[in-house]
Image 1 (tube, rainbow, N blue to C red):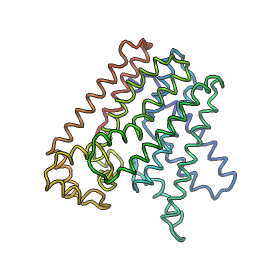
Image 2 (cartoon, rainbow, N blue to C red):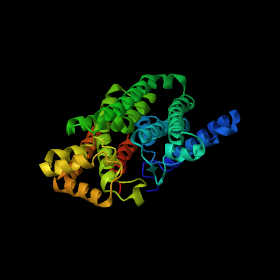
Image 3 (cartoon, one colour):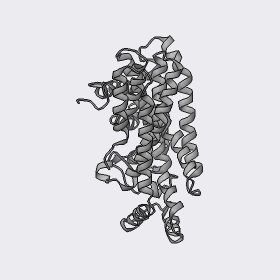
Image 4 (cartoon, rainbow, N blue to C red):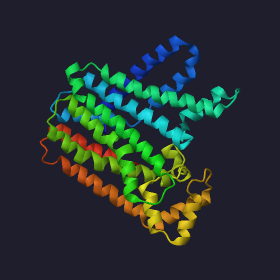
Length: 350
């Protein structure tokens, strides 16, 4: 199979549309002042790579509504990747993450620009924050200018508002609950709003909405999208702790150092002995974690059965998601592609 997302060349088409759009916007920025080159470099870097899952879900939401392939729809779907890029930049600032995809994160890369002046870290963070804000603006701009009829775009206007509201709510909930008590239900709520919905459910709803789908199809996509989005983030949490940085492109200490309220850590803390609880409390939130300390956290996660429980949670959710497609009357090509996407989103190597 030449493309994992069910449509040969879909990911490449999304990449090309993003490259064109970002390139044109970069030129417009530089025309204002060539001193904006560092901002342009960051914007180009953070949009140049990615799995493009969100755009794929949006595209197949459209096709599931019975609509044909369309270059304009590919552009609309590509705008989902700019939402993701904005979320990534802001998330890295909040978590003080240093690496992503093996490269310095936006706020870290920008420190070099300010290295010879006062407050280089603070100014770099401010510039990165503006980059994230602009990326979110670009997402709406690319969507509105995709070339689909205005009547089609109007169908999705309210859906965009929901996406933005729930994405910010999820980020805010994570900040509020960081370093809090172990609570799996609360952790899953953060996952749902911070990642699951904007990764799977909202792109599907927007694609289906553009295609004029019956409301019943949106219900199917909720039944498919929520568990699959949760499984996606649960896999990310496992990779975040147990993954190989050479493969993941980021440190596997980030979730521990940031004391993120992941379900994996919540399950671990609930099943830990008092001595293990004390160890975890001492290590969660520590900015620098040694290799032995990381091994100790992993050992506690393994001993409590939390890793196996999260694997079970992933499998259960993928099964529920795929079953939601059965009997929904989707076009065969959409049904096949969404089934494959469920595997692509959750069967990722460590």
